[in-house]
Image 1: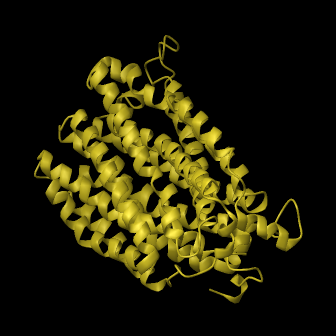
Image 2: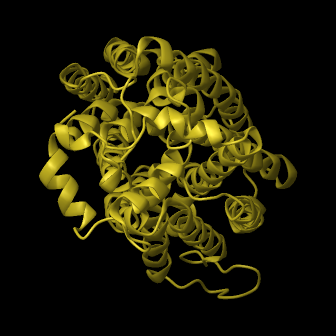
Image 3: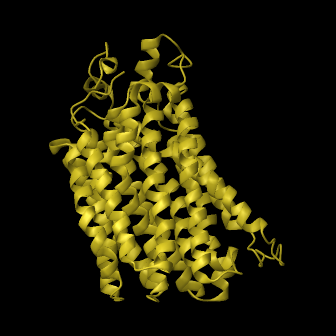
Amino acid sequence: MTESLKSPLPPDSAIPETTNRRKLRRVAAASSIGTTIEFYDFFVYGIAAALVFPAVFFPGTDPATGTIASFAIFAVAFFARPVGAALFGHFGDRIGRKRTLVWTLLIMGLATVAIGLLPGYSSGVFGFFTGGIGIWAPALLVSMRFLQGFAVGGEWAGATLLTAEYAPQGQRGRYAVFPQLGPAFAFFLASGTFLAVALTVGDRSAAFLEYGWRIPFILSFALVGVGLWVRLTVEETPVFTAQLELDGKSDRISKGIPFFDVIRDQWREVLLAAGALASLFSLFYMGTSFLTSYGSSMNLGRPFILGMGMVAAVVFGVSTAVSAVWSDRIGRRRLILVSCGLAVPWSLALFPLLDTGSRSAFAVGLLGTLIIFGVAYGPAGALLPELFHARHRYTGAGLAYNLAGILGGAIPPILAAKLIVSGPTIFVGVMLSALSAVSVLCTMAMSETKDREIQP
């Protein structure tokens, strides 16, 4: 790191010694519950985009075009995420992690509930707009999807900082795993909720298309209430508090603008981290969203696809946890490099495997994809906070993470949907493999961070 990252304060290992176990458990719960809710909201859209949105919001198109349109709107959120990262990062670096995270949770929850209440293109909802609202339906869907991405852009960095800045020195990977487990919990809940609805009203029934798919979105309201209650009980991180004291201010930590500061001082870290994590995102969103659509086109049945999603979520969570804890011993960079390296040949083999059309091939493809993703995702929760100075850590970590989301999570599913229609599926594998190769190079260019102090 540069000299500017050295601190006149004691090492960050001294801070948690005054923090009791009860406080640490509360922080872990707040970060995990928050990311679970945020990603649950994110995933229910991905599942709905694969299963029902082509029929609900694009009824005049053929199935392939409707799927492409649904995933194009899915990508809107990824382009909104850097905007959220910059804005919420600004306030997170100025007024604190805790207060900023309350707002991200509220915005995400309200946008998700609103999607569940939207009328379809030609059908109403709960007796209202019985004739549909036409083109306004997908337009409103785009708006709510933008708000979802906007909120997630500020959520992840704040949640990881909440744990990383409380964690004892040498155990940052272990503590940072809690927000990293949120996506696994969320994928399990999202798949399970859709599965329960499909089994109750019938996965191919008119009731599922009319109101069944809305239930998982509306249930988000209850989850947000729980998340807010937990988050409001958490104190501000000791590192942020120390930064306030160091600057001798009570309301902000820097006269500069965090976004411009991080671009000026640590642009290299932002770009390398974004490139290194792009493979991670491509595996994750291809596995959790696109493969749901692909499995549906193979007529594997929604209950089977959603059930496999729940199994994969458990396996993915285990690989994330093991990798995060292990990264405290062997380093973050090495594990991310292993994941990206495995992703290169795996991406080439994935679609030929899926094209056999069997349920066992789909299961192996889904599980393998999320296991490789988990190997990199676990250490990422500690890696990004360790890369950036406390003055702009929220902004820097959020920008790197969400730029990776555009490269790996927004573009590949759209291109994959088009490639599936226009050519052999192996082209999708070539695209993913090439992206993983770029991530390998970026990871090799990074330095190890596990022994760095993150004190201001």
